[in-house]
Length: 143
Image 1 (cartoon, rainbow, N blue to C red):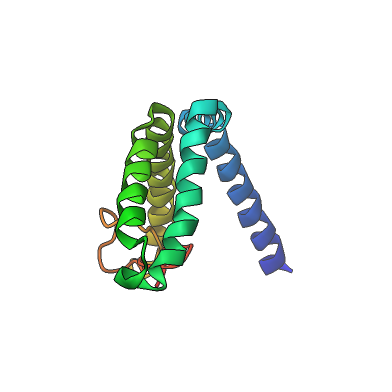
Image 2: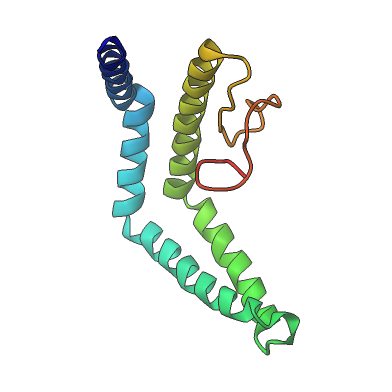
């Protein structure tokens, strides 16, 4: 019974921590930047143009240099990617996203380190990886 009560308390603390993160200035800035990026017509045009070209790029990649449009598509996807990345709303969003991810990485390391220095904590950030993380690959940063 004690383990169940303790488990519930830990989960309650985790929910409280999540609420604190959601209410943080970093998370608020992230949401504002996401909103601006999603609701700016010019930004969305750039993103959609890149996404469409990315589909074309994947098609061309199957054949490589032997595809008749290979060089044209390769050049165009780089141009569209740069145009999208240079958009002020996309750039601001990416910075906000990185800031939020850094906060989550720091929290993960603190929690994992408090349990044991040998706990593997997926950060996906080489700055935090000190040989104890598992980070390079899947959606969690593990490989």
